[in-house]
Image (cartoon, rainbow, N blue to C red; front, side, top):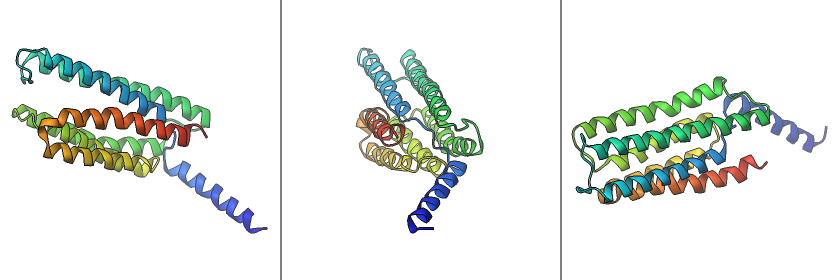
Length: 202
């Protein structure tokens, strides 16, 4: 057997190992759509707060409730889109959408994300609003890095970027909203587009 045949066999074994231990059917387009949803949601919040008489959030006020609803809808539409596009990609590749690797991915993604979400709700309950955007970026970045061990490894780089943006936002609390737009909106579109052409087109 020639050396090139050995290299081909090694490559095939490596691909099989990756498929068995990692969930690699994530759709890049779902990231693009998540970014678009985030930008739409952010535009609505900006309009809502700018046109209020206070121009800031009140915990027990209508504006605060609408902002939470807006965030919930952005997350909901992003999740639904991700499930639909990822399921379609998995079927196209002949992969299972729900197996041991996808379960590990989901669990490791949710642990930092849910912990961060609960912490943010706690500080909001104490009427501390200044670091909300920064904390969302940081915990989301940690969730991506934690989940990248069980999915496409490139996701960790997006996680690192989100953490960096979150730390900068923490230093500049007055600009937390715009860093949120950059991290959840623009970066998702840029990274999702890159992932689409790198993985989905092949």
